Amino acid sequence: MVSARTRNCSFVLDERGFVLARVDQGMEMDIDSARAAVRTTFELAGEKCVPVLVDLRGIRYQSREARDYLSSSEMKAKFAAVALLIESPVSQVVGNFFIRLRQQPVPTRLFLDEKLAVDWLLGPVP
Image (cartoon, rainbow, N blue to C red):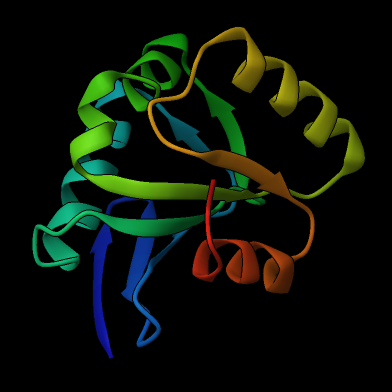
């Protein structure tokens, strides 16, 4: 299994063809962390455009600059789709608001269940 790590996130290239990124508990994502995560994910995928499952259940804070970067058009060349794993229905409501507020460059969905997220990534993503 191919894996990598940044200072606050671990990454695994799943044999089914997607990258799983898990943020560390209490992570505060700033623009530098976001850039490192994108770079590491893309390198781990062999610089191919693949789906990504991001486990955000440990995140404590994400800066506006990080959110803006992760919603930028640059992501179109790096990710086929993004499934965001979150921990609560409240997080889902807030997250959906931000997703709708800013047009996402790739198909992006929030999930409370990891299996459903993986099924979505591996299925025909809209």
